[in-house]
Length: 534
Image 1 (spheres, rainbow, N blue to C red):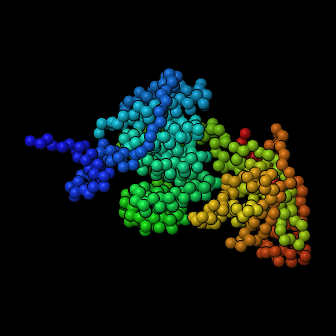
Image 2 (image 1 turned 90 degrees about the vertical axis):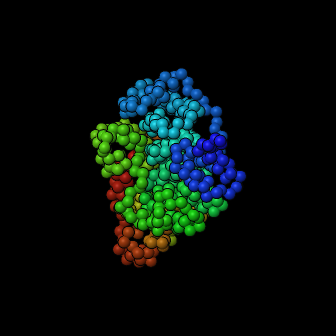
Image 3 (image 1 turned 90 degrees about the horizontal axis):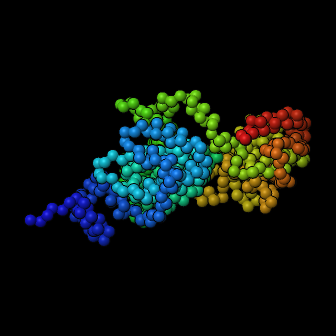
């Protein structure tokens, strides 16, 4: 009597036939579809069809790292994870940041190198993986980004054991470590030979950057847009399209409606498995317009994992609780925030802390005016352009600057403030955002002038030329000092309709010279309000 074949042997035969291009019987198709629902077989399918990554020779932990991280390495299912985290944290206080980062990277490399698939039905221990990530996030170890991305270069069995049930936490860690290195996240999306799930985790981190960091929003949107173009091309050639629904979910719940034309094209050109959206593109459009629906991942730190571990049995999980209602002492959390490096929140600053400030002297002159109108300013080179626009308005006597504007380089490259100018087309390559571009990037030894335009709707209202007059160094006690050092002419008030109206009112004496004492006072207040933290 012939020995009955095991499910594993059957699946191996089916996978071999698929790889050879042989036609499957209805029964084999049914067995293959069933395998996708069975733990152990599902992972084998994904590895067979997608996984081609050649793992490097991972380094093993040094004795010092092993000693420090032993609690994580030996963690058991019933251990108190919150206490464990505190213990390791406390134990590591004497370590330097570089030692701590080195030890954690060694730990993860050893985890990758020694991993063997669990038996189906065996409970995995995610804290062995996420505990070290919590420390990386807590200590802002941004240089460790690639070691975290390496977890998404592991096979389907590793993903199932450590990541699958907590993908949103990994997106949160990647956001925290990678939002200042968003180009690295973007490049990961194009890596070949990886299982599909890792891509939408990274995509979520990019969209989190667009959501939470306005000055990087346009860059993040551009990365997402270019990647969707890539997805369309490869899916039309037969590539797996199951991630598209996940990408659509991220974009729809952040309500980035500029992406709708791209999504419509993809859903029309490619057959998308309805993993998230049974109703296809029409349902996506409904979610996109429903502002009451929040981003499907509202985490901004891995502390959510700790909160989840503290949850009482039977209570709502962390991700279902109202935002802020996590049973933590908000005053204590605020105190923790104050202990962070102040530069870590520079998304709220008008200056880029990664660039040392030079003292620039610039002239901003109104073009086509009936008489010379200009202001000369001393400004730090690492000020973002959006802050520079506010400063210019104050120097000319305006307050509460709320106009649409753009900076334009001599070659036509634009930095518009209005996000509606950023159509998701090839024009992206001729634009960038003033929210993270500094003065030094557009005014320097190579490029000593640019245009500054204030707009009304789509039309130019006032046009200026900005000229770099001098570049020098700040003294130790006056870094980032801002000053109005020369002024000439009467600038058009906000109520002025156009240059003709301005010229008429100027001749009739209806526009008065601004009170420069008040202007200087407003600039000093602007400087105090936006002084970078030291």
